[in-house]
Every structure is written in structure tokens, then in C-alpha cells.
Image (cartoon, rainbow, N blue to C red; front, side, top):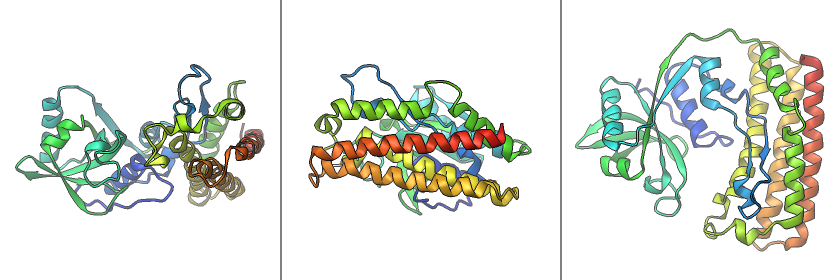
Length: 314
């Protein structure tokens, strides 16, 4: 199992890079982990909380979809006893079985948030180096074996996630995509209406200084910009999924949807940069209505695409 090919894909976050790396080591595909990646969630809730803490790209269940669609089953070991966590890690590595570590990036020396920000991060522990040192692959940041010691393991509150192979299912693209689209539009609180409610709050009460509090140096790591990045990454990755299905299962009609979804992802990225430019002082707050209009247009565009897909598939 120590035959990893670590790489960073420009639209992947650290978890997705790790899952691709893990799947490749098992000689399995990974693209269908994005089966539910097209989503958007906004919680009006407590208006005293940052907007960035109340908007999400949605729950896309990458782990579950990796199992259901590619036969890579994982087990979470969430004991708070760090000695037990470390014992699980050592036992798995002795069996030549990789362990995904879910930890705090504040304690990961080779990242840009080391000793700066507390952000969740994922890596793969792949070998025991002895003397309480572990060889770790971190596809998101580099392509080498990094040394991670026991002290940092404990400080980062690392949680072990082990994996093994199960039988791969038979995939029917029309069912896979049809089910995902149907979930998107099944009730009035669907993703597209959440986008519209999010746009309204931004229009009415966005306070960028509040959103950037404690992230003034690494502004792209503030919750609002991080979540909006996830939104456009998810769209681009869903476009890749549609292309993968079109090619692998000879379903050329999916290519048109793939192209439209990729364009939507690109437009989300452009739209987010309007707020980023305000945060950087390149534009003033008068540019906020442009952002709001962009989100509303994207909500309409995505909803139209979802309706067209649902009409064909369901």
C-alpha cells in the first residue's frame, strides 16, 4: 500500500486530494465521490454570527460516496483518548495499511497556517519511521514524505480514519445524477432559494470587517471566502464528474451539462472576487450590489439547469 502518487488538483481541497491519493493507491477511481457535490446551504439563524459561518457549499458526503460508488470503505476512530488514537495508528501502519488523519493544521509544520490558524486538515500516514516519528503524505501541500512526530500528533488532536476495499457497485449514470438533482429541487428550501436568501442578507447587512476578524493577514482563509471557494470548486468538480460519466459510460448528453456546470463554477469564482477586492481595498462597498446581482443570476442559472436535468432524468 505504500505506493502513493500524491498530487494536488487545483479544484480539490485537502480532503479531496487525500481521497484521490488513497483511491489511486487502491487502484480504484475516485470521481464519483462528488455525486452529491452540487449544493448550497444558508442558515439565517443568529444574525450576530458571521455570514461566513452560516453559509456552506452543502453536505456532499464524499466519504460515503467513495464507498457507495467506488467500494472504498472507511472507519472513523473518534476516541478522545490520544494514546488510543496513537495505538490505532501504529497498529495499522505495522499492517502496511494507510491511515487518514483528520487534525488541526495549526500543528502541521509544512502548511501556511502552521502556528497561525486553527483549521481542519487531512493527511495520510503511510509508514512508521521509528522513534515516535510517522511518515506522512500531504498531497495538498507537497509531493514528499513529511515527518510528523508523536508530540504534534497529540497537540493536533489527530483522529484516525482507516479503510479497506469492498465490492464495487454497478453504476447507472442516469440514476446517480437523477437522484442528486431531484434532492436539489424537492422542497422550497432548496439550494437555489438559499442562494437568494444569502444574497439578500449580504445586500442588507454585510460587514466585511466582522467577516475578516482574526483573518486579517490570511483573508482567503476567513469562513466567508473559504465557503464561497468551496461553492465554485464543487461546481467545477461536479462538471468533471459529469464529464467522467459521459466518457466512461458513453453518455454524450452529459457533456452539455458538464460544460454549463463548469461555466457556472467559473462565474462563481469571478463573483466571489468582487468581495475579495473590497476586502483588499481595491474597491469600496459600492461594489456589493454587483456581487448580490451575480449571486441572484447564478441562482436562476443553476435552477434552470437543475430543472432541465430533472425533466430528462426523472
